[in-house]
Image (cartoon, rainbow, N blue to C red):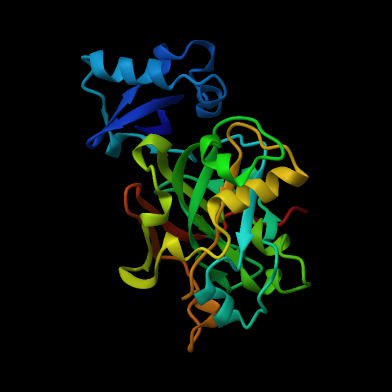
Amino acid sequence: MKLATYEYDGRRSIGAIVSDRVVDMSASVGGYRRSLRGIIENDEYDALRTAVEVTDSPGIALTDITLLPPITNPDKIICVGLNYESHRKETGRPEVEHPTLFTRFANTQVGHESPIWLPRDSVQLDYEGELAVIIGKAGRYIRESQAMEYIAGYSCYNDGSVRDWQRHTSQFTPGKNFPHTGGFGPWMVTSDEIPDPTHLTLTTRLNGQVLQQAGTDMLIFTIPVLISYISTFTPLAPGDVIVTGTPGGVGFKRDPQIFMKPGDRVEVDITGIGVLANPIELDPTTAEG
């Protein structure tokens, strides 16, 4: 199934994507009807599948709704840096024994077709197309051999990076957490639809030009390794998001450099999942005082 979090007519709901429409599943999941994280926590997938099969609702056209990040309220978003060899080489970073991890705040995320903001403090907004893994059940000290059992589903991610702020120090946090810089969506594809996530192709396009493309089999640290490693230092919870890394071709390592600017459109396309698209706009907020 493809499950989405969306707004329609002023109301937030969850729904199943059927062709070019969304079928509202609110009535099928009781008190958790407005949260995909709640569906994951309570393992409501069978109820949803049955509801989709028997519904006579025509659904709502995707063009009439606003898609939100699939998980709007994750307990944790853990991002993986330098996890494709092509990206590690273009940055000149050394090989490492353990994954390079950093965090992103949930309130920096935007959904499909919502604008990613260029901060007023920078002109170095870069794209990073990535595969997102959504955790399906709680776990600690998860074995690599069992890690895939803990996955609820997959989505596309654009870890928009404000490069000059990212490089202020050796820590990535500021450059990865400006408002409206993390594209997430367009929906979550349940793990049963993608039994082997190593056979996907990730493509990032800016204004229609392909700038990144790689198979997910090229991850340095695989998804089971990441889940096992992360769950050793922090308990994983349903709805947590692991953003698995970006391939080579990022804008700040090109010659000449390419950064996103207002009026641009960026797309992250992953086979078996869909296309996450976001226009680029200037941050509309102004300084206080």
